[in-house]
Image (cartoon, rainbow, N blue to C red):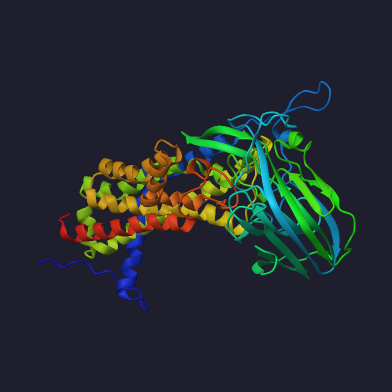
Length: 542
């Protein structure tokens, strides 16, 4: 019997802890001494950056020139003005406002007896004698008419409003992103809606009623820093008509302007200057069809009855067909993540399978009989390397891509610092967990080609099928719920707003699961794969 050489132990360290950190160091040494693996990670980062910057630099936005024979403009000269709301989010703020000043506290109460509309760009017979060409009768689901208390008439001002809508009943909305449902159903002369807003300091409370006698509180908005004198009155607005069908990489269909007309009576204003003159203002008018609709946006007052017509929207701005201007998001520059993930998966799978191919796994397991530690060490090392790779690539691609977008004339939708950190770090975590998943699959299959193919089929392929629109919309969304590709939702920076009609598909940057929920799906797959790999590693011969 031969005697092995004992390694002296450093005093004060437990043997198990010492051996595990030595194992981590050994696995790190294996990784960094294989040039191909290091180059593979560098390639992953470069691919992510280059594809992201190519996407940013291919917009080529153009716009019309100035008066006379001025040449057409392009790039940064076409960068649109987009107002921002109190929370710093980009907003659309365009509506017709019949207003009076309100000094201090007070309230406004109205009855709405009708909400009608027109829209352009759709099929069907046009309205005879319409002031706008090719307009059709019909109300949009989120057309609005109601009452509003606003800090000022400047776009992006703090506000709270009670309104009836085309298809969503009564709603209280404030500061663009908040939406609370009130009485359901559509408004008509036989079924009117009574609305009330009361102001007390920075607090505005909304009420609705079906008969003007029994009132129900819908919600309360706290508008920090509200001016002593605000603007209060009636509003009407209507977002663009859209009939869109998703297709490979985008959507197609019809888009056109729309108008909403609300009929008000029993208008009662307390506080401020009751009985003062009403002023009509076209706030914003910045939508793509403003030059057409502004000709008919107006109000008429006959005794105590007001008829108000407006176009536009009061809502957060979004990316996709619902946006009236060329917009981009920070995750647009992370479109190369799927390509970088392929390179990471190849390296991660080979980090385990190479030892089987060369027979070195026997030496590794002889040196460390506790096989679970070997698997854990490999997963930790390759996961950490993949995380750093993804973080560096994302931190380079996003800020440079944003500058390129602005230079091309695109407006980059702003996000909070926490959202930006989540997108960048989440992209890195996506690569890290995918690498751990690949190590586990490599442990189970023991062959590089089979392991790489398996991981690509379950992560990359579902992502491409879902985002590119190669499957029916419902099937694509379910694929991005159930497959590990759900983790790409961690890159989504813009939420879906139920009060904004849009095409919310992965092709437009919207995933069916919330960011952390989608990432948790991949983590679940990785955990199951690690468990299966540990079971097989213990039961099979090296």
